Image: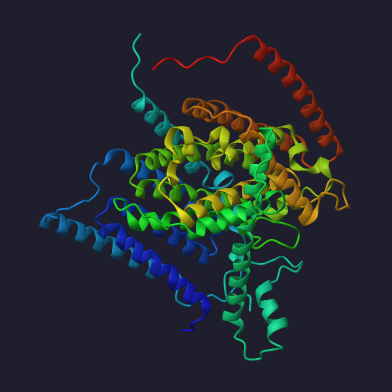
Length: 172
Length: 408
């Protein structure tokens, strides 16, 4: 395989992603794990850039890092008194978790193997057209309009539910 | 050679052809002198050098802005400001910077050392990465990706992670309180900010910064702020929300001196403190520059075809004008309470922004192309609306006082 600068940067991103993802599940300190997750999400965003999916990369950062991870950290800082986590793993859990992981791995391998033409698809440097417009058209005009609307209604319901649960009951 | 990296995220200063400037530079300038120069890695070196120029130039900005802030503050309070170091005190910030470099870099022993050391760099890096997508002039834009403004929003939303990191790792109650306040504030105000940017994107139909500026090239009345009455409102929401995003005074609860010492950077000293400081002022400028790009014509001038208030000098002048307004507000207005802060965002800005988006959609359907008519009607509506708002607000403010908070 030709070892160009692009492959070098790609493997850099892949290494960062995997190493930090490994840190997320092994580090004892839960806040450290959250920040390692930030690095993972950034690495994944970088990989999206390599797929020329720039809109997706920015969305990844804006939603996961700027939104969800902040919420996670908020939760951790507000609630936990002790940050060192000692996680006991029973044998049953180990078996179950291992089984599920193995099944997931098999699924991913099957999907990769069945994707048409991924092997002889080399990166010849062709520029794919920008994705933003196409995503917009697919979501708001073409076949994904209904799922999009359903998801937005679902989010609205979740919002109202959250407001309802967190509100204290006021009695006159 | 442009196939080496995926084009969309390559830094390129648009030299009209849109070619990769770094590789061009290497081919034209360096190869004749050193024929053995490795083009591929060499062009990366050139890119790194350019990034280095940015990293070297942007800290000069706070050097000027801090002095300007102190001078402005002094004027507002009828003082003279720093006068001792250099002529009219112009070297004061340089002296302060040198002092900060030589100060002890104290790390709280009970804190989380790793995160404490990393936090300033996260904030610093993010506020610098924003500059990559800002078009300073037609030719000076580091990278003109087609998702420019979206990239800026994404990167600047990461700053809050650095703030949380700093606040938590200091192991101090002031820091933690400050960072929690800051996170709540930034996450809230990101919504009206994004929605007001969306009105612009809807009118221009592009996320690319250079296309947004390019659509405003017909003089002052084609600037997006005057293009429709909704963008006019959106500009003010954008500006106020961005003041909240950079934690400046009417919204400086995260670092309120009188309440929580210095907020999330209470425990920092020396050069690490200076990094926060530089990042704050760089952010201020970046936010103003984004405002200018989106609403005030960017590098395009007031008159079509003339360069008056256009080009790089015009862009910088307009941005510094917005920075001055920020300083003006800081030394004029008192700090908001937390409930006022959240009320302003959730009860006023967000509904108004949604209304704006609806209005912009309707406006875009009625006036498909911007012509004299649409701009004339828009300016007329803005004019009438301003006068109406002035009279109504004046009457209401004169009548009823601000409602007092219910006792808790």
